[in-house]
Length: 192
Picture 1: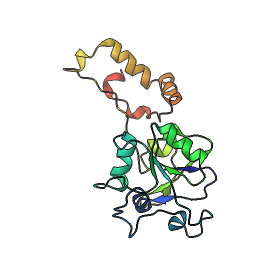
Picture 2: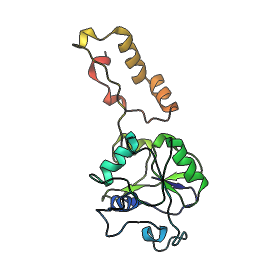
Picture 3: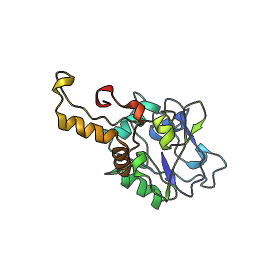
Picture 4: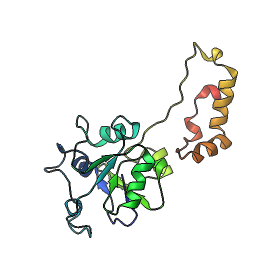
């Protein structure tokens, strides 16, 4: 969840995210439409919180839906569907009242990722918490290929995978704003 850098909201619970994202709001008594419904002391007061989201079928939206609103649809007033993760975050940069759902890789200096709380306390979205899967909403990016057995994997593919898992490869992955996995996650067949 992203907000404008100046927004003082400290964290959001799973139930609060449910109330923001869904008019059916199964985890809270009423939908959350205004900033003071999240925090009565919010300086944003009774202003509506415009919600910026990605297309409902995106992996990021699906991860958020699984986390805080399984079985529900994203349905709320003042909901704007944006064409890209960057567009969601730019809306949060531009509009002080905005809140949005986007991926870690879309972060910008004028927007802030809000810590999420799944009942164990707020967790800041960082490379370390995403790798450790202590941040509540984590989405895996997988490279997949089909081979009859280990011996039929093309050598060029093995070279590519070895590069991706190398220090240089991990640095390259980080430049595209994806959280690289730790080397202990490397499959055994490319470690030799």
